[in-house]
Image (cartoon, rainbow over all chains, first blue to last red; front, side, top):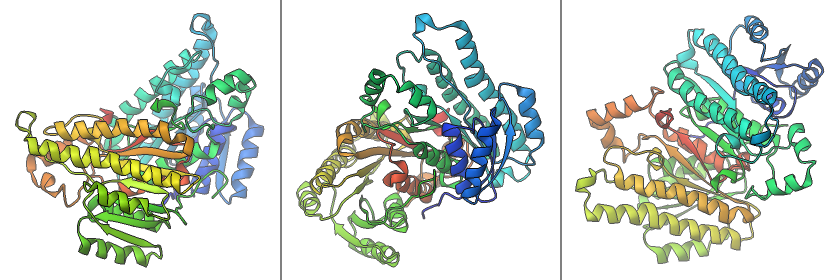
Length: 254
Length: 254
């Protein structure tokens, strides 16, 4: 009756795999038995993640790649025989008040969080549907969204725009890829203990304000999000598509 | 427990499941036992409770059953208030009487409100109070909702009213119980093939409607739902509260 999280014989690709959530997801997927293709702009980060995966007796292959460079990403895909799982994770945030948002920041965030996310998802989907037995073995795409893909937040207007967009993309993709038995979902975490958030939390007032918005009174751990991604990646969630797994300690329930 | 992948493990935990004799309740009881959790089953048929007990005890966990109608507040209250162990509630008992809005009988409305709304509320409240009284450091309550807690369906006006209500209750409970580290979530399945829904699938027109409404060309199984419930019951989802896991093959993504 109970299906176990088991990704043996699956090949997963994770973008932004060098740090934070991408790193955690890569390791969790490897722990669940998947072979993981890890992408990051920073070679030294990839080496570290690869070593950690090896320690958990998992298997990985690393590619230095900037996902905003579509040609670079296409070249990576050429070197991969098959793909079953995509964790579309690479993303960033530059909080600014709406009236003060710099045009270059809006461009940068939108190019990375939306345009690159779309391109990566499209290219991976094209590769996934080519597998002859896809309908039988299924596939899973998980977009790293955010609680800010569900609700607004001060100084997060561009990020809100990007992540609400990803929520929409996930639903559209889910409907179109369902005939191939490829499922598409998002994970919407609250603030997670990552290097990016640790940096935001140097501002004590901001930290207090954010924590007071999380009913459970704590930030998420990387493992909370990585486990949710692993749950969505395999058969444990074989009828879950076009939806979001909200890992936010109750933030958006208010 | 891996480095970043958490196990779906309920060893040493006790779960109370209502409507446990058939369908989703029965399957969930079994899945919880498979994850190592002890089971307290409430249902209205002693022989079915006994046959479930045989399956559960084989999994080497404790099993207690209580033959009781969830509408019988006094009997339910005295039973729950005497429990020595309780960590998880699967608030499952529910029913449906599909009728076109214009023809909904007063008795149908009463039945659905009594079981799906009032009994669900009462049992959730009694269990939450008991978990707090037992000084548990964490708890998890899972309300069995439905896609009709999120969208409407033909002849489902009352059912939708009760299940939209359960979605609201879930979020309200999540906020009030967060300080006790009791998480509250719902699962929203598509129409699952169970003894109760067999007649819907037998109706050719309705069967086609279900098929046409579900992008992933499969019927949701009891195992799909039971796995999601067990995930929410366990610490693998320790930052998920006030949220819904939608298991609908893409029905509500459209």
